[in-house]
Amino acid sequence: MVLVAGNYRTIEFAKIGAPLQFYLLIVAAFILNFMDEWHQVWIVSWVAVGVIIGVPGVWAILPVR
Image (cartoon, rainbow, N blue to C red; front, side, top):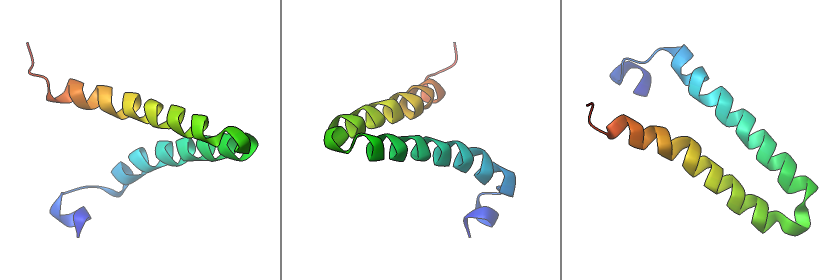
């Protein structure tokens, strides 16, 4: 339903999904290796997501000069 309604191509889902899966793999590995300090790893990972997604998102909505 989303594919047709949004006029998306299958490759666009792979472009977004592959980096996200890689990122989640890294976060899961850190959490498994540092189970005692998983709170800090989780907080740092969410800050990184905020920067990785938030900065381009804000950049995209700013008006062009």
